[in-house]
Structure formats: C-alpha cells, structure tokens
Length: 419
Image (cartoon, rainbow, N blue to C red; front, side, top):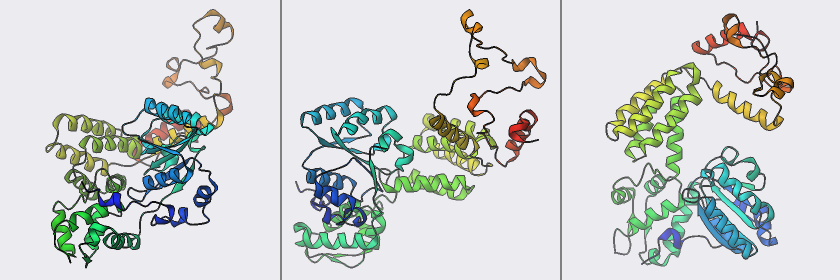
C-alpha cells in the first residue's frame, strides 16, 4: 500500500521545513539548540498543517532522544506516567503532546516534575493561545514558539516540489495550470493540500495531466471540507460565529451557523459555545440569555438534526440582538488575578463560622451583622480580607439592566460605587 503523499513529503531536517524560517533558520534559538545538543521543553503554537508534529520529530531525532507521542484528546494521567517511567529508564526522551490545550489542570500538573528534572523534554502542540489554555506552572518551564500560517508562495513551492520530486507524481509529468481551487480548499493546511493534490493526481492514469480549478472542484465533489471540523476551518469558523453574535449581527451569526451545520459540526459543540457566550458577552445585561442558551443546549441534545437547526437559529438571533456586557467575565478574571497575586489571605473573623465555644471565644463570628435584621436587608460591613478592603472587582456595564444594578450598589456601597 502506497504511503500518503503528505507522509512521503514530510521534511527530514530543519532546513526542509517551509514557512517557518523565523524559528528554524541558522542563528535562531532552535537551530543553535539543536546544534548545541540541548533541547529545551517547547510549546509550539500555530494553526493546523504548518509542521508542528514534523518539527517535534526532527528535534527529537537531532537531539538523539527517544520520541513518544500522546494525543490530549485520548490520553490521560495514566498514559503520561507510563511515558515518564519509560523515559526515566532511557535517561531522557521527548514527549510530544498534540492539542495539549485540551489537557485539564491535573493532566498538565502530572508533567511538571518530569519536565523540571529533565526526565522528559516536553513538546506540546496547540492551536490555542497557550497563555489562556496552559497553566502558568507548566508554561513557565517551556519556551513558546509561534508557527506562522503558510503563505501562498510557500504552498505553491510545496506543490511544485511534490510534482517534481515525488517519484509517483513526477512519473505523471503533471502540469499545474491553475492553483486557486487547490489553495482555497486546503485552507493553508500543507497536509490537506498534499492530500488533495494526490487525490487529483490519481484522477487519471495518463501522463501529462493538466490540473485546473475545474478539475480540482470536480474531483473534490463535496468541496473537500470547505468546513473541516477537525482542522483550521473549525477554529476559524467558530471564531467568526462567536464574534458575529458578540458584534450583534444576527445575519452573520446564522450564516456561520449554517456553515457549521452543513459541514457536519457537532450540534452539542455549537450549543455549548452559545451557553458560554451568553454568560461571557451578554451576562447581566440580559440574564434571560443564559436561560435560553441553556435551554437550547438541552433541546438540541433531545431533538437532534435536522429540527435542532431551528432551535439553534432562534438562540443565535436572540443572543445577537441582546444587549451586551462582559462585566461578569471581567470580574472573575480580575478576581482570579487578585487571588494569584495576594495568595490565601485570612478570612475576616466576623465572617468565620463559629460552631464551637473555643471559636466563639477567639472572636469567630463576632460582630457579624445579619443583613435581614436591617433596613432594606442590608448591613454595611467588609466582606473582603482586610488587605483588600475597598477593592472593586465588579464594574457594571453600560446597559439598562446593569444601570439598575449600579444604582442598587450605589445606594448601598457609596464608597465603592460613588454617591
């Protein structure tokens, strides 16, 4: 059985990797590290099909280390520990984790000790911003390298190299007359481009095959995943979808929804993102948005396709036309930053539980003001640790609902929310 073209064309050294000269060219940190025999742990951040896996394999080979590969989708802590145990026996190895951003905190934490001691050189591949998806402890032990999307010239060079240097394609004496369809359908993904090229090249057994846009579209038939739910299009389209709703454009929202439905996207995934958006981008500007999004999630899972498309459409339009606020999103992010900076500050004595006599004697719960005993069910007292007295984390958005909330807070917390 013939090995796929994408595998036959896989680069064997740093110099063969296209489009990433900013990290692979002579003089770069990576090139010097390879030549110096020292490989640091790395996070490779970039879109699909730009060479993250290939780069990891080349680096492991150059460093003379064993290579282990795990997928964050199907692997867990047990798999990580097995690799670490094997790497310990071999006195060092490269562990490549594809889609590392899908690992939860406990899975990422399982890597820390081995990475810190040098038992494994971790190379993680991610299409998501590592600052948001990888915990700080692990991120601080790795160097982040950003891989760029392949330019048109890179892809054209790859096509030409494939039809002239690959024995199977070269024997067909292929003439590439038009490239727009090849480039558009592959979406900048080198692997997808080579797979499509091989598919088109296999269209005819004759030599002298002329590749045109019409031929490519004809061979692709189903438009070769104009929406690829496992590739770059997945991330680009969901990004456009979310940004359209956030931008209050129901027309673009239902268009991108249709693109995902037509492309076979998991309906639960779409509905789940709508629940997140309702809290992140609408929040208390319209609390009903979260209720409808959650009902949509439940309904979609009960009903299924094709009727679920109507439920999703209703939700998208409702969320698009709702007032927007990210105040809840900002409040929790600011609170998390504050906790990381200030640590475990002591709970004020008046807020502590006092189930025993000794605790009461030590002042636990003393002078706590029970709000329901006061006018308007409010007693002004400090609920934050002493060092954070007066801190404001929730800043109401500029919308009708939160203006009411702001007025409520002003009446009770004049020092924090103004007169």
